[in-house]
Image (cartoon, rainbow, N blue to C red; front, side, top):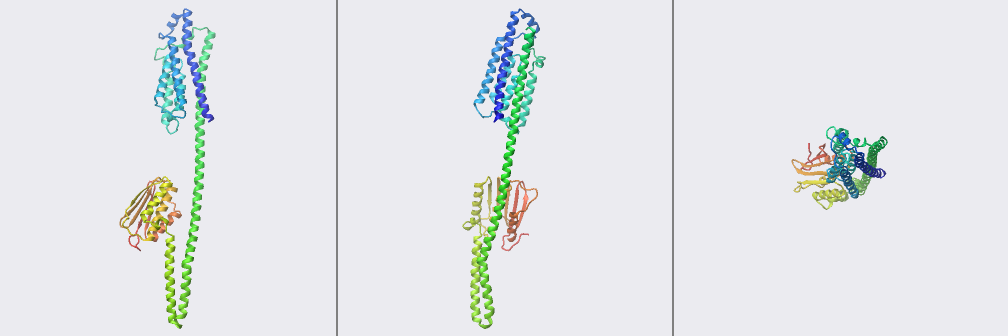
Length: 439
């Protein structure tokens, strides 16, 4: 904030200095002309001038009025607040034309106004607010330097016939002449110093802004690292909970069933020689326990199914998953589903759903993808292709999620392939026949 205030104050000071310098130069032409005429040295002046000058009074008012137009444009910009203008805006072009008019009215005896106009356009144009548009920076600075060089009286007078202010000053007494030259050079030097100070304030503000952005990026990176650690820990906790839940399900179903079966078979082994009838009855009881155990196992497997598949088809479950991810992230998913007439086993549906779920999670979390294609195709096998526009990989790091995907697909006799194709690419092939295997 202090640096921006410094730029604003520097611009105000530049306006004041340039107003004084223009008033000084135009008044000097007017006063010197009257002084020379009063001394009766008009003829000597015309002999020294390379061209007959225009009316000094007329030039005085033209230069003051044109500079007033420049001030009105700068004040208008200030009233607009933070609005940024294009470098090719009509107000910028008008400001440059007014600047040229002021210098022509002063016979190019003062060109420091270029620094004021340069600063006003440079600090107020949107093309210069970003370091990305460096072509504008270079072109504008080069153009300003050329204009500053070309409008220098000593250079321009070699090409164009111009009345020299020094010729007018030469008619004053030496003491007054020295004061005039001192004031003229002091104003030009002060104008340059203030302009350089304004540039320093601007550079400091840009550096401070870069430091602020770097700090914010570091904070974001730190938060992202902590979030990834938290997510990894959450996955581990969820994995442990899932294992414990499965262990409880096995204990409550298979554990009790197998214990009963073991005890029943032991009893049959004792009774088969003593009382075959009771042994047969005991075998029927064991058979009942086995059937009940199978029912319990099926019930446990249904509990382990993804919630989205409990009351929905695979297509509906995938669509629900896609909508959920699109709602909570920037990921847009393009779905192609050609499996409408396919009757899949429950285990296959579970595997397909889990694979898609893991792929979408990886695309958002690790790939930072914004677009993903999911295709369910029918070829010689059931084919799934998942491709995103994320960062991809140079060397594949197989973590827990990808291992689980491979294991699930392998259990079904399928094949899974990972590749980097302008993003993460996954191709899965599952056999159409139960018990088949993709080679």
